[in-house]
Image (cartoon, rainbow, N blue to C red; front, side, top):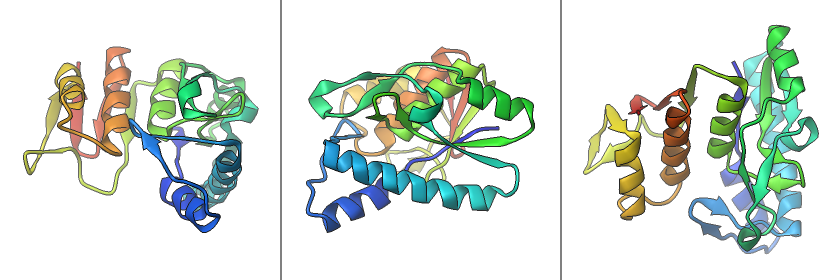
Length: 193
């Protein structure tokens, strides 16, 4: 098992405290060099908390230090779209029975959406399943909790603007994982091929 975490609320709060503009495009945070400093600090804090919650088997890993890869999206600043990779540090941790707890920075460094990074890592290491945690039970559509959604339908609903905000990267990441052969769930909602 691997854990990939974000730090969205912590980053936004600290950026606002420092007087930095908080802006998102398509669910991705626009990241300036000043914002990247906040991102790194927030990831370190959240990573420590997640490791403490996981316990003795947790192994803290910073994505940019272990070689996670992403293609830069220059229009968003220091932001990347992840590409599947299998960093040796993750594989070694898994082989040793440890639980890698990974912050989603990529080489560059580039800030990467945690959901997208989790999906790319799952594909890269050949995971059989990915589970996206969220603060709601699963995907809601038309006021109802959805038990199953096809990746193609999820993409269409994102494209037509039915969904926006934080669910967009989760849905797209889950759809991407499913298309690459990794079973995906967002809470109780199964995303299918």
